[in-house]
Amino acid sequence: MSLDNKYRPANLSEIIGNKEVILTLKGMFKNKEAIPHSFLFYGSTGTGKTTVARIVAKELGCNENNIIEIDTAQFRGIDTVRDLRKNCQYTPLGGGVKVYILDEIHKATGDAQNALLKILEDPPDHVYFMLCTTDPQNLLPTVKGRCSQFQMQLLADNEMQVLLSSIVNGENDEIDEEIYEQIIQDGQGCPRNSIKILEKVLSTPKKHRLAIAKQAAEEQLEGIALCRALIKKQSWSTVKTILQGLKGQEPETIRRLVLGYASSVLLNKDDEVAGLILESFIEPFYNTGFPGLVYACYSVIKN
Image 1 (cartoon, rainbow, N blue to C red):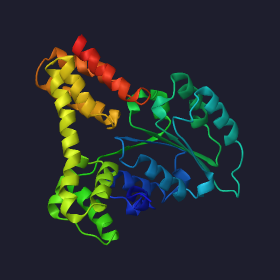
Image 2 (cartoon, helix red, strand yellow):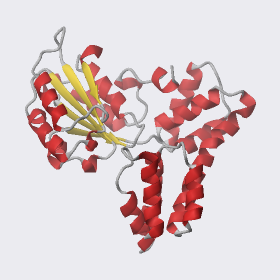
Image 3 (cartoon, rainbow, N blue to C red):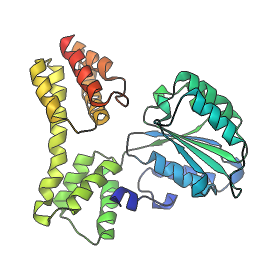
Image 4 (tube, one colour):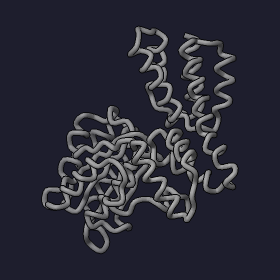
């Protein structure tokens, strides 16, 4: 079992970070009559949106069999919403409540989101919805307005240290402070990314652990090299070489890095190329993957 699954929090008290969200949720459960039927969890990839949604479902008294998780691969637009509205009417096996977790809901079409509105507005008493997204701006305002909204934040360095230390202790292992610092730097506040780096480190002989931890930093440097090449509008040959070195990395992570870099440039000065980069990289690469990243880079260089 992977470490992120093995050490996934089982209840609200086990969650590290996001104190305001956790306190608000705990406060809600003191008066269960006032608990909303629709929640929206949003924030960066790997910050625990789905994990918190599943914990909330269990706090509502929902057993594992009655938690229905629908991700984007299963989402067929209006047809999925129609099926969902139909199935909502059935009481869950064994009684209790039924919870639908709709992951990356921003990928649903406008028509599908509109179709979802009615059931969000007036759900059966036994049904709750947990909407999760990395891009809340792509949700209809009316959908967001039907939900109690919770923003999941990246972890501060001290919070990440607590998280990583607890896992290392749980594995009856120990690592040097320098390695902790490297993982925290590379993870950029994302629990999932940091735990995955830690997992590689712990599976490596101690004398090689620092080198393994630094690999993520080197990969990030390749991403920064891409940002600089795009801003300077270097030759396609140069950009192509950098892209070949980025194969195998998550295109959406690279997209966000490029967006952040271009935004910083644009906030410091009026830069036409930075604006062009934002335009070319504004749409997620969920459906297009690495080819989408390549095309976005090509569009910047050739414009």
